[in-house]
Length: 304
Image (cartoon, rainbow, N blue to C red; front, top):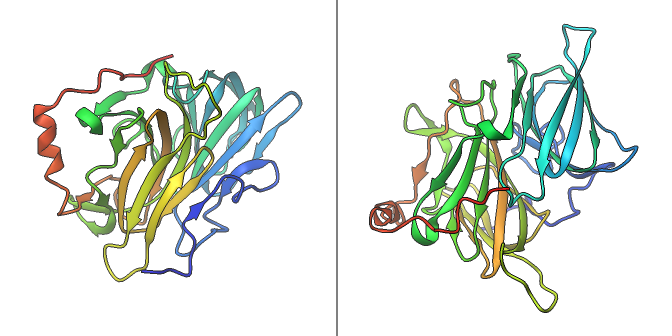
């Protein structure tokens, strides 16, 4: 099923000014798109990444780099606050510190490394939240070849945000995530949420492996329509790629043999409640029961 919109973007296609990636719900790259955004930026000496005071709530954290500083000014204050965020060697080396900022907050990010900022247009101002890496909930989800590591820092029961839900996922080489395929595009109270979603990907040679020749780490992502709305993605994905999920079945995301896969998800939608409820694809839902007789992949969790 073809679509006039583009939902998959290769590295560099969403570059905007100082940002390596910039998806803004106020200036969407595809339509319909109204509830989520993402920015990825590289920091070096003398470089400052500026975030405007607008209707977006934001989550800020280092993708890589030892120390990143965020200066921010709340709408009801004249005092500039500073929060230092401890990072990590790479996205495959455990969680990093993170900072949640409410709507109408101006911020400036500096340091050395790379930073990710997720955004969601919101109405209610929530408290600033600093979460040290030691407090990030780490879950090993699934079993066998469907084992993956999830950093649940942005779930409704962990982070007091207005609209945003966010997680990080690490998939070791040869494993699958997002299986069974699932959707969250229809509001059914208590059963399914209506949430659009962004995937930001990175991939690398698996920890503990060395390649004697040049390589191009990769994974695979699948998405397909669940109704008459056009949506069809079947792509080889690499570091810096972005997939938008406006609706429809999505998953699995697979890590290529020899290559670990990372992705960040941000979700939000128009529902009256902030919940992450999903429906499994009826042809694939059975896979969950198979985990009961399989062991968790011993390579996980990845730590610093």
